[in-house]
Length: 298
Ligand code: OGA
Ligand code: MN
Image (cartoon, rainbow, N blue to C red; front, side, top):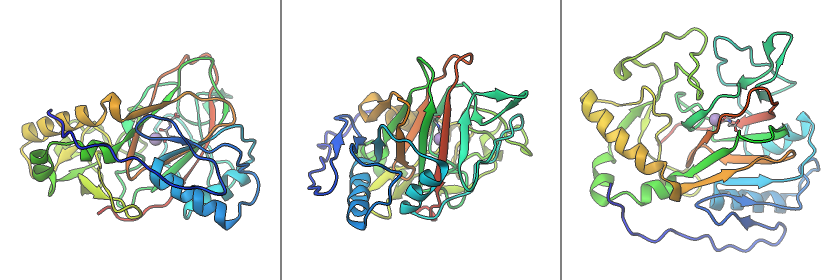
């Protein structure tokens, strides 16, 4: 697809209470020197929110958090959300409150968390719901020696860099977001194995959404499998989606997170997508996770 050559916007902001170190890639910034286990005053919270709006993904390294700390930090951004629907063959365990476990660890023959050691394909969290979570947080407790990196893509840039005729064409499109499988392709408990995207269950959202905080427009693709542009002929829907997905996941929009123990990553599901590399299942990876309730997509 031919790209628009519009300059990518740069975020020039002044922060007085926190340091913000952009990754230099299309999104992401480190916030060093903030201890998330402490109560943060409102000026710091305000600056963290501004940095999040500008950089879409924030990383806080070197944290040591209990679940209560992870929950209270997460609540800064809104009400905590309930967990994704577990897959048929794992029983995602809930730690106290709203913290879920993302892990490949097996204990007593049972997976203690979700997503295993598989590759997780590009997605934005739970977009198959009418009101998808606005953001999610992952806190790393154990990481494998290699693999399991997480990649984030900037969906503002993906939208802004579309050719004008494509922007015009997709302006009124809505897309259905399949709820039957999770991001590693596992069938969720209680769902049928749908093969025709026109039959997939899940919420319908505009394919271009407006971010309620920044007012910027972003591509909102959700996940590729069983995705369907409502009202189009299936062949045409597949063609448009393939082309949009190829564009949206190109490396110029992507930043990769190589995990260290103690990293907290906060991402915005309204304007980013993410994926994860597979890793060796004989090593251990353990993350605690929260997500924040969101609103209807417009
Ligand atoms: C998630 C997710 C990626 C990872 O928790 O929503 O996609 O790196 N996790 O485990
Ligand atoms: Mn996810």
